[in-house]
Image (cartoon, rainbow, N blue to C red):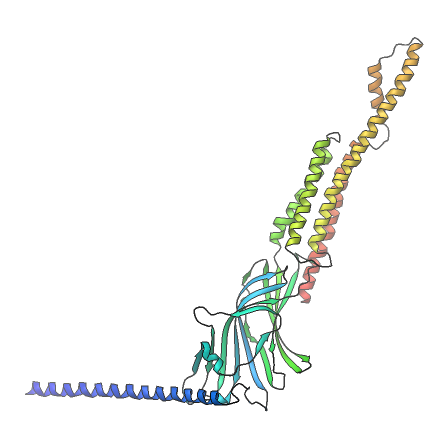
Length: 416
């Protein structure tokens, strides 16, 4: 009997808990359905409203829009096309009382549902191209809080124009802007604001050929014929890394100029060797210059690297001209020696006719020795002089070039 009564109580206990769980689940489902129905009703009401595509508080106070930006990746800063590419998360916050609902949780809209509600018409002023990512789903969503506060987030990639000053290239620093504004709403209809805390950029981000330094945020106004428009601007400071240019331009050009000086140690009468060396170095520097110019835009001023390559080309070309001068001096030497030999031999023949015995070979050697001891500029003396003059002038050029451009680049960076 006791066993039966115990089993009887356990059976009713189990039934009670089962019905209680079913009741709570049904209540939660009903509440969730009711909340969803409330949200759907609010959205349906807004869609049926003729002013659903108008801004909140239309005809009244301007709608306040807070912006936020997080840069995920900076992929390229191009000096040739004067632009930079980045992937970022853009966030917009505003309040729309028409979207207030009775749900205790926020509502999420994705994909095509995002277009059901009004959103700020933000655009990038310096945009060249941009797209919202759509793999595997359109990367755009809207959070709607019960009080009508709205938060929209999207992931997009953009290529933005960046005006660059290349006078000090490749020892330069650049500042590129991310400028955002409303396309249709002036300051009387929409107020945009972007704070420093709302911008997130990793300072250790690796960028080809550049080092990211810092970012600054500016909120300004720009006047147009239709009114004043708020501009939210992020200024990104970059410093160019010149290690690659040292390895591919400066050090090779150093070596080419040094190789051109080797011609001063080659006999001026060895024409094939000196001409080959001179022309080869000139053509190599010219080819190097053409390769650099292909990667840079055509500008109306001289860049730092243009000054360097032009100086290197001038030095190797002067080495070739020095050989032309030396070769001319060799020809003059041979003509003078030949002329003196002819005069001396004529004189000795006259003396021989008078009965004197003269050794003509010894006489020829004496003439050459006398000529070399005279104070005439010879090819050998010119080469010896060039061995000292060219390196000294090139060293003076380096002492002027490097301090000037390195210090100027640092001063511009500090100013920026």
